[in-house]
Image (cartoon, rainbow, N blue to C red; front, side, top):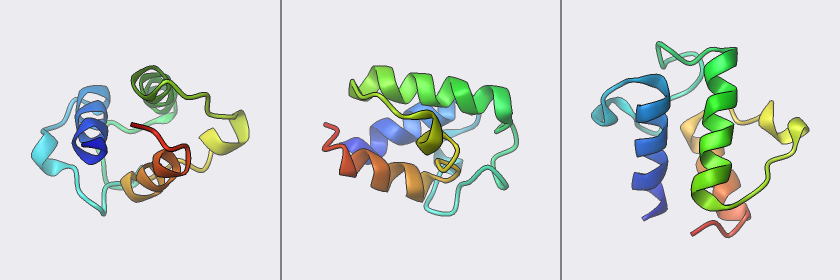
Length: 77
């Protein structure tokens, strides 16, 4: 299930409880989501879902909802 895998990645990257990750989770609501950890998140997403995210797209991936939609657009499994 892509949603659970994404939540685990976010939880591990930002060192928060997986139960805290929901549709409203974003760069503004997740405590440890800063510029450095954002790139760690992108790296983890690329590795987990075997995709390559462009630099331009990296800048737009600022919430759980946006990331999930992007992964689905890549047909990530």
